[in-house]
Length: 332
Image 1 (cartoon, rainbow, N blue to C red):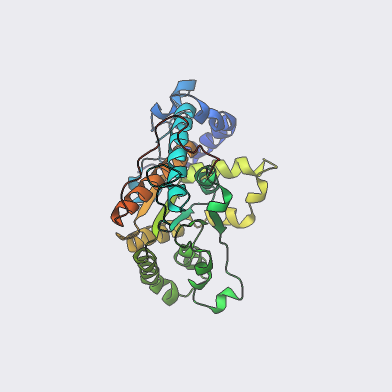
Image 2: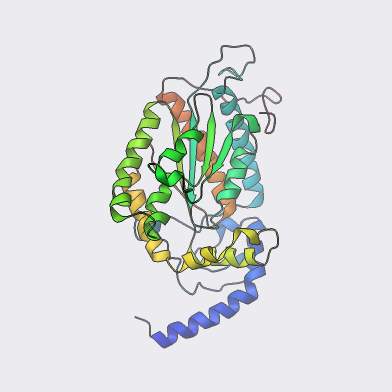
């Protein structure tokens, strides 16, 4: 057990060093080969710094604690994998929307495919917006919709908490991305006391049954939790605070919520444990590196759609491999 005096002294020292190295840390992900950095170091040894982290990143005691937040991608690898996954997603989206035959031809038999619903949850500043932009970027805006949910309105509060989500859910041939979702009931509403113990306590089963209903009707449902450490969240908050183009994303409530991280961690672990089910499993994304998280989300979504088509007996959609033989990102 470390003495309190040593802990305080070390924390003070590292706060000073961190302030000095902050700009350098923001640039490290642009370096090629950063994914090979030693995960026990605070910064990348490839730029000459061998500073050990003051404390290991804490991110839960259950499944979150087993995530490897040291995972990184270099700029070139990220670009290559994003391009390949984006092209594949575009093809699948056109097939599901009935705009392209499964064999890639423009004149073959076409039919509407199952709905695709992608749910994003995660810590504040975990990179949900950037991941969503990379996910929908290659698609025609007419073929995908993005819905963002904050606190329910006074009218919405008069109904069951799931009521307000029904209007945005995709139908056959459609795709919807949700920035926050029905999981607010067992996260922020639980922690902040906006829902009673009885309300959020029964919400887990209500959510599972709700999702099972969607999947039974054919929906391909992807659920992402973007995980970052407390240290990384603080660094992103500090960068946002001084960036005029991003400061609007940061409010007093965001800073206040950091003091409740332990309560949120407990709520997140309970959410994952009680709402992870075969019809709609959670995909936990290591998001300490935004580059890694963006690629992971896009590739996972492609795989989920491919597996969803097979599970529903709709067959394979062969990848378009010939140059110029099919759509390119932005043409969808």
